[in-house]
Length: 373
Ligand SMILES: C=CCOC(=O)Nc1nc2cc3[nH]c(NC)nc3cc2c(=O)[nH]1
Ligand SMILES: [Zn+2]
Image (tube, rainbow, N blue to C red; front, side):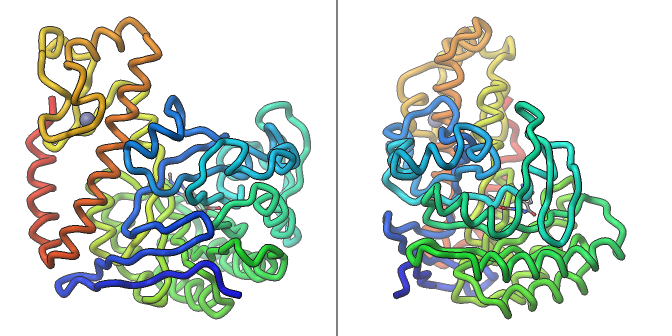
């Protein structure tokens, strides 16, 4: 019985941009979509209710973090992540691979899996394709990700060549380990910045067959134009009737550029992390709320924004809160930045629907350059 289903509604006539939606047992998600990151079971500083008010349709949970704390068994005891965090819309969980490679000091990587030490208490932990699927099954996410190896940038081609074989073997084992029919499983294409290896990896992963396909190994320090080029190249080898997910991307500009190149799903900590550092996104570019310029400003962050923060508070007050180290500053900034990202992809969906995406993208990029500060 198929539960997860992606429907491609319209393809842009001037680019590879598309609009569509996918159904899960926790509801429908329209694409292109931006997914707020809720690493340890919370999108930092905001409540599920506020997320819904902002228009969030799906959020991310991190397998590595939740396995370490509180433990996926504990989450399962509470009926899974949806119940535990009281979020009844779709949740996507990562496989844990990326966090292991980026957070913990790696013990060793073998064909069977990866052994590492917890960054919390140094405890030795083993993660295999089967273990990752077991954890994600305990969490009860609507979309699970396969365990992959995200190679660093730059990376020797000979290493990447071997790595994509491991990633393909692990992807197969993840698919075989899947138990709950209602959980979707996405494959991940690797291959570094080498187009020939990207093609091989895409063909291997598509051959195994998944509910959706992610482009891994990007936004790991490579220049933007390389990320765009690899994205452009790789989406041609992915089925049109499946969602494409570009992990860890990105700035508003990145999202516009990669929607144009055929990507449907994005996640990034930028809106939430920058908010906590006082860096706010506006229609005219970025704004640093702590600047002296805003001390006496009665303007909202963004005159075009109708979020709770922009409707109720001035830059002067937000600057004051931030300088005073008030927790409310983090919350109001996060509400605005998430609303900015979610509204941007909503406008993108409308522009594709109305057949004016290229014009919309050109105008947006021009406005971002004006400069918020
Ligand atoms: C939700 C994620 C599901 O992905 C996985 O389970 N594995 C995986 N995650 C990544 C995350 C990334 N973030 C960035 N930049 C901020 N680049 C990334 C690359 C990968 C990757 O190659 N693999
Ligand atoms: Zn706002």
